[in-house]
Image (cartoon, rainbow, N blue to C red; front, side, top):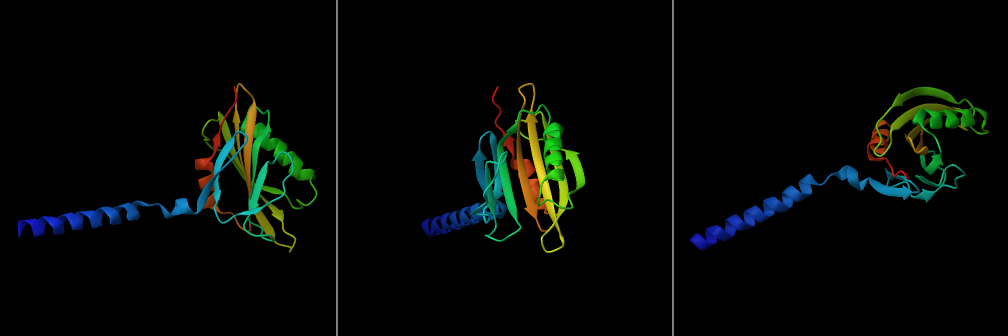
Length: 178
């Protein structure tokens, strides 16, 4: 009788342990994968698997599907910038004269903390979409001083996605060379 009770309690504890492990699993983690390029590592949406052809300073890019607006581009070395605001200003200047970025307008700029960086900045903007509406963009830039170097992530979505922006900012790391 005591042995049977002990077996039942052991089985119950084992089941609770297994259930506890699955209950503690973060479903958000399955929605993201870790990406590394150059001096940058960051989480990106796991569903965004279609490669995007990129041009310097971008070193990798992914989108949700072949014709989707949703895309993320990564720059493993944006350039030798002492601050994130200096690097972001370069991106802003290029966007103002770039073909295909009609209607470029800054919505918000704010400082953020990025692992491995001395400065970080988020710049949110909008551009005109080909169908006549607007598309939301976000640049997250990190820089390291006194050894000037910067990395960046560019996100494009139909409307601003604050959860995606949060995940990028919180997961982003600059692996500086000194």
